[in-house]
Length: 305
Image 1 (cartoon, rainbow, N blue to C red):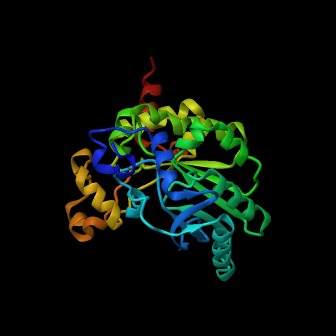
Image 2 (tube, rainbow, N blue to C red; image 1 turned 120 degrees about the vertical axis):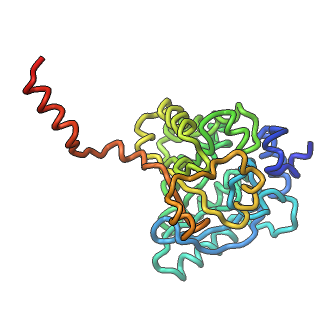
């Protein structure tokens, strides 16, 4: 099997080793300390906006992924950029936009090209840019503890680790990777905690179209095994149907629940724009007065044992 040509169409049939795919992908998107990028720009994320480098190549094949088609085509002839070139471009974007004080690599997996990332973060560390965000699937951070140790020397990094599924089987179906690799992101979380790196955990778990209630519970249980506090701080995400995401998802409609619980008139009014989500995990903190239980309690106390 040609791993480089592996796309989301294989996620139901031929699982791959994401660490092997990492190595194969790096052979196409990394050259020395340089890495391939498609473009540079900004997005409105992280409240103030963020300067973003859109890199090429990933080690998973998530079938709900919004990233560009370069994810599956790392051998296409995009330009290689050195860490200082990437930093200069991103820093110029930060300087032009007064509200923006952060930078990141997006689209591709940022931990591909270890030396490139470490040097790029080093440049950010020396600048007056506030933060460098590493948005990762956690595969490499879970398999390479020394990499996490090297990242820990930087004070400006902020890691956002994304969990893709709630069980090994669903991880295989959603990402195309072998089931054992489901546990690597959780190992990555342990490594980040051990080296006191600032991080948060996100998951595509707020969206009932792409995660069943039982799978959501399984994900929460698995995360709770690492640290129960992480559950209450979990950033649950919804799938945004960008064209690339919709194209991938359309091949897997049988995997997902399209019978959303919403009034018919709302579905007709908003169509594909309608988003229905699970209640936030943080609502576990919330309390409310229960009239029915209060009345029942009064009756029972009056009646006695």
